[in-house]
Image (cartoon, rainbow, N blue to C red; front, side, top):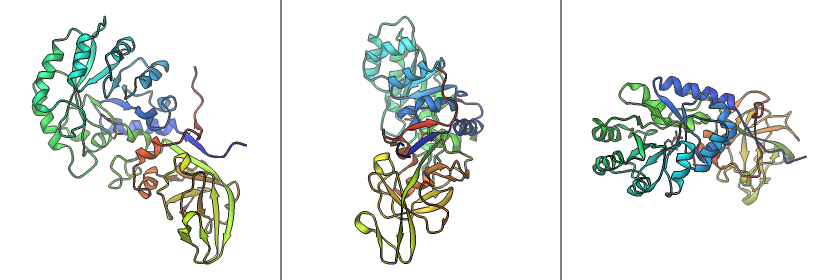
Length: 371
Ligand SMILES: *Cc1c(COP(=O)(O)O)cnc(C)c1O
């Protein structure tokens, strides 16, 4: 029997989350972000839940190719643009849209021989200071692009640094608006947090929103609001089983470093899941976990291949019992948000979903893809 650990993807939940995004941004087109192998879900699995998308946004050309292989004929945007001149050939061949964020990318376009002119998204650095032209340099970049026969259509894009926090987006929106106001072209500004929090306020032009995390069922502004508050369902369940049990007495300790000490008789379960599976090692005693669909807690340190959990209050649990590390219990339907587990490790749901280790099998709970 294979080791019982499993990562199950729920396309139906992703479909549901996509509808949540639609109702938050009624007039916008959705560019579903499937970079990083659909945030660890597997592009092929996630795609099943995203057939209602208006387009996809990826970072790797290989991810764009995989979407085309799934027969997706609609828009695909490379959100970092191309990395070298040669990449533009694939853009031409696959009809990819691409971001243009620096002079070099304009030089490459100018040197690119193509029959089909491209649609590009000119990126403004409106305050994040990662990719993009500064507001001062934006208009000259636009003029250069606009003069190229290789370019058919120019849209405008920027990215927010604080859409999930108290600083918000207003300062960046005003810079962006001011510089693009009189330019013709569609706009793409909102990630998940901005889409859910601000897209419906009537102040933003949202031709294309770019939701990522929200599609996978993690709250874009946890802990202010939880996934449940947003009406989201987990796109992924990481599950395993109890492979051993121990009876502890007062004074007994658990795991490396003996960081947990029992203060009375306890029942402990050992779960086949550790940091080599992508479970965060920084989770300590008290991190929530579901056993037989009942919420309990981690005890002691996370090891490479195992964690230990408290079974004291779950008398029917034992060898072979189902354990959900995050996601939804198939037994009871009870959910444990990835955001709670991430918070216990001092990180975000994003990092956990992207870090599912290669040794964990990833399956979909819907019928397999037709070829
Ligand atoms: C990753 C990314 C997104 C999606 O962000 P979420 O917070 O997951 O919604 C949108 N736009 C850009 C440019 C990105 O890099």
